[in-house]
Image (cartoon, rainbow, N blue to C red; front, side, top):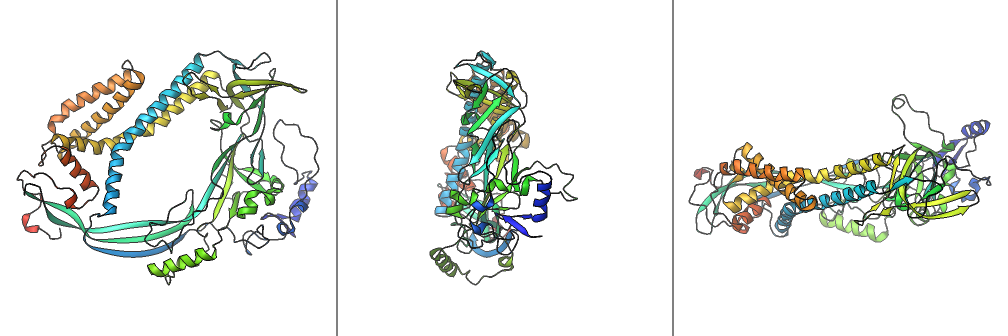
Length: 581
C-alpha cells in the first residue's frame, strides 16, 4: 500500500479507505464531551509544506523531515555504555584542598537543613489545615441561579467543556482540564566506584598524646559512563572525562504544567461555571494522568498478545490535530517534529563547528581522542537531544469548590466565573476533584494530602538525629557511637520527638496531645538511657564536635587536631603502625 506519512506517523491507504467507509473523517479533531461545535471547513494536509508530505519512514531512512526540509536523525531509545579510566591514588585517601572544604560544607548542610525543612513543612501543614477548617466553617452552598459574586459555592458536573493547549507546539487536546509537558534529555551519567585498602596511622593531639586510627589508602577510582534518556540535565564539567562525555545543556522545551485556558462545567438547574486557570494549577485530585498518543484517525492500535492483558490508559488523538505543528515556534526554531514511539516530539542536537572543535581539543588534552569503544557503534541517542510528550487529565465528572468572581448573562444563559478564595490566613483555596464529592469529603481529602506531604520531612529527622546525637555527645564528653544499640536508638528517638514536640507546641499550642506526648516521651527516653553512654577519650567541647565533623568529611588529620587523647592507647596494635590491616 502507498504510505502517506503525516509528520512522521505512517497511515496506509487501506486504513484511510476503511475509515471513510466507516464514516470516520480522520481530518476532523475529536469533539470535546458535551460541547456543541459548528461545522468547519475540513483541514487538509495540503496546508503543510510539501516537505512534510513526503513519504518517510520514522523508524529508518534518516527519520522525519525537519523544518529545513532535510531528513533528521531518528529518535533512538537504546542506552549506551562506555568504560572510563582507572585512576590509582597512592597514599592516604583523605580529601584535601577544595574537595575537603566542599565535604565539610556538605556535612554542615546535612546537620542544618533537615530540621529547617521539617519546620517549614509543619508550617505549611498548619496553614493548610487552618484554611481548610475556615472553609468548612464558612457558608458554602450549591451553585444556583441565585448565587452572587463573592459566594463560596460547590458544583458537581458531568458535562465538561475544556481545551488544554500548548502554544509553543500548537497542540490542542479537547476535553482535557489539565495537561503536562514532560521533557526528557539524552545525557551521559558518570558512575564512580572507589576501592581502597585499610591502613593504620598515628595522629597527635595538641598536648602531645597520640592515638592510632584506621584510614583508607592506595585507592583506585573506576569511572563508567551510561548515556540514556533522563528527566533532568546533568552537568558534565566535573566528569573525569568531560570532553568525551559532554552533555549540552540545551532546554528549548522544559517541562511545564498547562492548565486549560477555557474550562466550563455544566450542571442541571444551575448556570454554567467557567473555571479560572488558577483553579486547575494543581491538577484534578484523583484523576488519572493519561499519556497522549497521536495516531491515524485516533484509532488505538491493535495490542499484541503480551500487552492485551494490560489496561491501556493512553489517550489517542488523530494526527490531523497536528496540522499546525509545522508552523509552531518550537518546530521552526528548534526543529521539533512528531515521531510517535509513544507520543514523543523530538528535536535532535546539531553541534556547531566551534562546539565540535572544542570537544576535539578537550579530548586531545584528556587523552580520549582515540578512545573508540563498542558502545560508540550502538544506535543510541546523541547527547543534547531533547524529546517530550504530553499527559492529560480528562475526568468524566468533577466536583468544584470555588468563589464566584463575576457573573455574565449571555444568549444561552448565565455564566459565572469561579476562582480560588483567599482565606483569612492568606492562603488561596480552590478545589477540583474527580468524581462526585461532597464539600466535607473534598476538604477532608485535602487535609489528608497535606498530612501525607509532611510525612517525608518527619522521616528525614531520623537520619539527621542519628548524626546530630553524636555531635551532642561530643559536646558533652560522651561517645554515643560506642554505646549499645538500644541506648543509641533511644537517644535518636528522644531527639526526634523533642524536635517534633517543640515545633508542634510552637505551632499548635501545648494543648495538642501529640505535642505533649512527644515532649514527655523525649524527656523520658533521655533520662532513661542518657547515663548508659560511655565517656569519650577526648575532652568535651566545641573542638571535639569540630573534629568529629572533620572525620565525617574525610578531612586530613591536620584539619582536626584534638586537644588531648587522655593518655589512652589506640584501638590498633602498636606494632601494626603504618602496615596494611
